[in-house]
Image 1 (cartoon, helix red, strand yellow):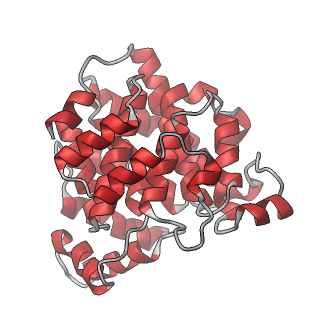
Image 2 (cartoon, one colour):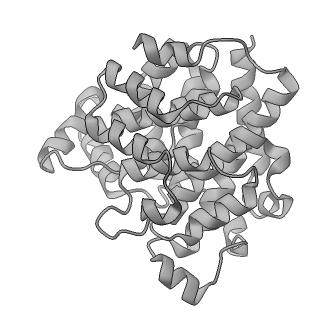
Amino acid sequence: MDQLITLLGGGLPPREELADRYRGTMLGVAVGNALGLHVEGASAATVAERFGHITDIDPKVRETPWDDDLAQTVVLAEALLEGDDLDLDDLARRLLAWREANGRGIGALTWQVLDELEEGTPAHDAARVVWERTGRSSAGNGAVMRCWPVALRWLHDPERLVREARTSALVTHHDPRCEWSTVASVMLAAGTLLGRDLELPRLARALEEAGAPAEVTDALRAAEAASLDDLALDDPFAMGYTLKAMQVAAWAGRQEPDVARVLSDVVSAGGDTDTNGAVAGAIMGARLGARAIPQRWIDAIPRPEDLVTVADDLLTRVQA
């Protein structure tokens, strides 16, 4: 664990710059998610044939509830703002309340875990029970897709950041691949917010030292020189896989500083496009800030002002 903590040592960027990056992270999740919604599940070939290169958000998005990628990100942010420690029972209650009020886009694994919680299984057991029931093979990307507020809340405290990243995953995703790909993604986001290049081989070694499975660290190393074609995001047998989402985060941080191009390329690559877009959006927003996100995209999402407020509140907790 010490190596992971050391990777994020040092001071914070100036407040004005950091504030823009915080806002960019939350807005990046939103616009990336929205950009990919109407082609979710399609192959790259189908996207190209039916829609061309995706560059605009469907206007209907503005009038719809937040999709699960963004909604669960905000749920997690609100839980992190509530107390000093991320409480598993509290987070579980919040997710149940969100499903009751909206639940749009919720994944099958998360749905099963929330059913288990609703039936009275304790929050520290529900995800494990479902994981064991499904043959210990379920490793969806739902924990990675919502993890970004952990980096925003605990940027100044790497030890807490790693611990809370794990907790944020385990409420719904018990598989170690989900837990540690979430840690890796939060680390990548935190390094990006700090303006540091977390070299993937070094991050992979630190994760190994902390106990991450080889599948996670191998996938992280493979992303070092991978193209989008190499990542095969539209592979029908790996669509929605947690390690794919983590690799999108690693890939996005190594592209040219162009939010619109990177998000359009990711979504046009097909697969779980709304989640992949949200992941890439979080990293690019953390890297370049809200000012780098096309205004037409921000205007096309519901309640962007609420996302700015959440980002600002998280920053206040860091710099209190």
